[in-house]
Image (cartoon, rainbow, N blue to C red; front, side):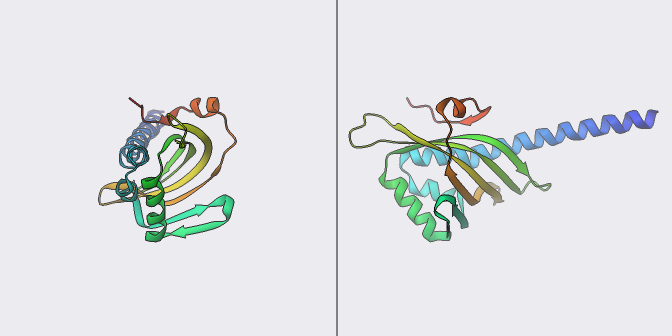
Length: 170
């Protein structure tokens, strides 16, 4: 009987500690990837954008059936961010982490905004669903696999998600 209780307590403690580790890793990813990603869009900063991706990035553009890789993809993406006034926000639906805490997978939604020639402020243009593979490089999380597609969700659906990352405009 004592052994059963001890086993049950140890199982509960291990589940609790794993949850903390997962939460801590999700916070690290937020700090290393999602905040700089949103800032890069907000500041039109191509170097910041490139810094959160691995050099061997794999980008899957699902709706166009294309795969782009490496430096050429990063340069094109960075040019887009540098020459457009755009904004992005993220809602994280799930996070999976390998036992060593060196690889992670996240999926969720993003909200894309831009400012056209006649717009006074950023205007929400649509929503997408994304999947990313992340890995730690030199102590920081980076995106090494990125895919997305259009998502037919509403503003209310996006805002109803428990984990949302947005920059607050001043």
